[in-house]
Image 1: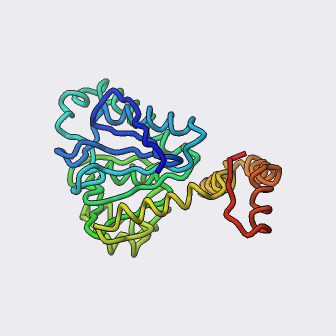
Image 2 (image 1 turned 30 degrees about the vertical axis):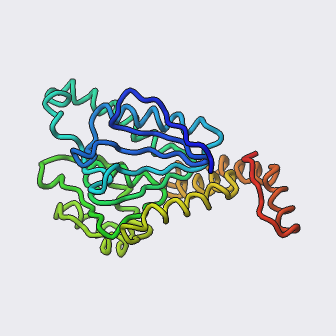
Image 3 (image 1 turned 120 degrees about the vertical axis):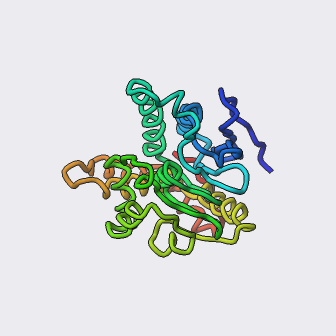
Length: 270
């Protein structure tokens, strides 16, 4: 078994650890159903930057501690302290937006392991993942219409692209909770599994991903993401360069050799 290394962070409300080629980012605020505080947002950016820079890490999993929630939204109890004025709100948005961007820009596979509540800002975090695997007892929703909040265009476009305009409007207009069965039916999650199997299913999945060719996976992620942009903004030249780099890589040679030798390939990412 590969050694586990835990990252030192300025808050105990986030946990980051490395298990072989897999990074784990844990939202650790279970007494508040893992509601996101400002210090948690700041730590998310730090964690993702370190995972991005670590060449050994090939896939990252986001999960919530405890059994009640992935992330239940923003920690409203600290609004008076950190979001009570326009200036305070701007600073909060600067930190949270920077960390959201770090999640969106992450070029390796990002997996959301969801159990329990995945609400509001928690759903926004889950939507930055490439793959969402949920337990049968998970619940999803965006309560903005009950709170008088506004949601920005970027987040709503991601939701609409994923589930379609009509389902996105239903989620936003009704502010209701969706169960896991409805979430998978409309494409909000990729897989729903029994609660007791969630950890095993996710670990098995990410171990398979981490053994596959990282250059191929990163190029595929970049191509799919580029396809979601307006045609005028797509950088097709960069995608072409990615493909050329793959065919010139040692991993491509290793893949061919392993196939001919009828063995599992050992990819190095170069």
